[in-house]
Length: 604
Image (cartoon, rainbow, N blue to C red; front, side, top):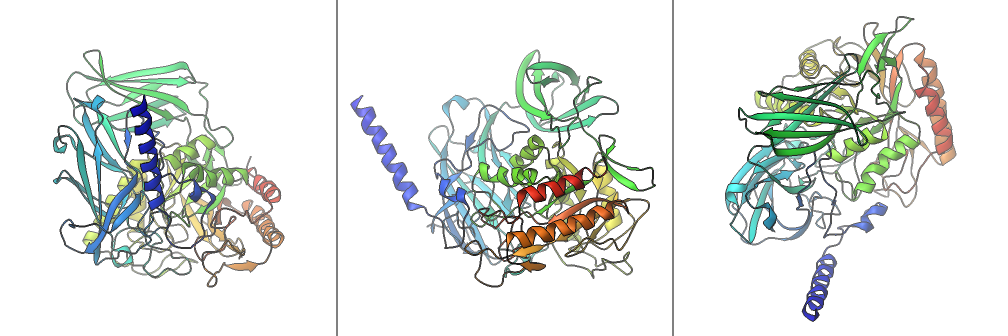
C-alpha cells in the first residue's frame, strides 16, 4: 500500500510538471475554454461518433516538434514540445511559430499498444493534417496523405514492436498560399478577410483495434418517399462468408432490421410513420452495424441515421423553393468560418465546439453555411443532434478568375494546371465521402465567389451526380452559370436581389457584415473592419433588424434562403454576432431571435 501511494504521488508530480512546462504562446485574446486545457486529456471525446467502436486510444497531448529546412531527414534533435492537435502557428500549441513553404514540420512521440489488443490489427487515425503528411512507426514508413481537411488512417500492425514503446514520427509540408492546394482563408500575410496559416496536425490522432476483416466506412442514405434506409458498409477486404446486419432503434426499441451478403448494400424497410428529422425535431435513429462470418460477429460499430429529404419545388406562385421533407422551408443562418483565437482551426474543447452551434440555434437560425473550411466529425454530429442544416463549402485555393457577380459570366475561365485540377477533384470527393452520412448536410458548395473557380457547370454536374441526395449551390456569389440547384447572390451590407432565375431556387448567400469593435475583445489594436461600423449593441441590433425586415420583403419576390455574415469576429474582421473570443454576444438575443423566427417561418 505504501509503495502504491508513493507511485501515485510520483505520477501526480510528473503530470503537474509536464503541464507546467506547457503554456499558450503569445498574448492574443483567448476563449474561456483555453483555461480548461489539460495536456493529459486534450479533446478526449471519441472523434468519430457516426461510426463508433468501444475500444480506442487517444494520442493527443504533448509531442516533440522541430521545424527544419525542406528536404531534410528526421532531425537528430527536436526544438521542444507541441500540444497536439493544435496547429503550430496557434497559441494553444505552445509554439506559435510559422513554417512556410521552404520548411518542414516534424512531430515525434512514443506510444504503447494496450495488452488487451493482442491479436488485433491496429489502425492509426488522423482527423486532419494540413497539408502533406508522411508517417513512420518504428522507422517504418506506414503511409502518406495530401489534403488538409479530411481524415485518413493506416493499418500499422506490421510496424509495431512486440512489446513496450513504439515511436511515431510525422513530417508535414504546407505551402499555404504559395501552392495550388485547397487552403480556405489561410495566407502568409493575414489582413482583412484573410487569416493566419494553419500547418500540421489540427485534429485528434488516435489508435483503434480491429479484426483483420472489418468495416472501414458507412454510407447511409434515407428515402422518406419509399420509406427505406440504405446502409452500405465498406469493408477493408471481403470473404464469401461475410454478412452485414443492420439493426435500427428508436431509443431502446428495435424498429427495423436488414441483412446483405456479396458486398450488397443493406436496404431496410422503415415504418411508414417513421420520425422525420428537421431543425424543429432533430430525431436520430440509432444503428448497430455488424460484420458477421459463420454466425460469429467479426466487427460491430454503432452509428445513427435520420429520415429526411432535401429538394426543390415550384410553389403556387411559380417560384422555385427549397424543401425539407417535401415541405417548403426558408433556410436562414450565419456564415460560419470556424476559427478560434487560441486554436485557429481547432476549438479548445468539445464544449467550445458545440457552443457556436448552440448559440446559432439560440439566436433562431435553422442553418449554418460552413465557409471554406471543413470541421471535425464531432461538429457535424452536434449539428445533427441540435437540428441545424449545413451548407458545406469546398475550401478554396489556386488562382482567381475575373469576378463578374452581378451578371451571368461572359468570357473565358482561367484554366488550372492538370495537377491543380486533379488536387481539387481528389479533395472535393474526399470531403463528400467523409460527410456523406451526416443528416445535417443539405447543400454542397463547390466554389465561393470566383475564388479558384473553374469548369463550373462540369463540377456542379459531377457533384450532383456523385450525391443526388443533396442540393448543389454551384458558386456562392461567384461567376454565375445556369447549373446546379440555385442562383446565389452576395450583397453587402443590405439584402438585395439584382438577378433572378426562374428555373432554380434563388438565395442570398452572403449579406450583412455589421461591424462593432468591442474593446478588450479584439485580435489587434487597429486594422479592425466590418462592411459597416457601429458603436453599441443597440446600434448593431437595430441595423440587423432593419436588414431582416428588408429580407422578409424579398422572400415573396423569390429568395428561398439567406446567409448572414457572420457567426463571430475573426482576427481583424469585427462583423460577428459574437466577439472572436466568444465572451460578448454583440446583439440583443431576444430581438434577433424573434426577427429570425419570422424569417424561418415565412414559407410555412
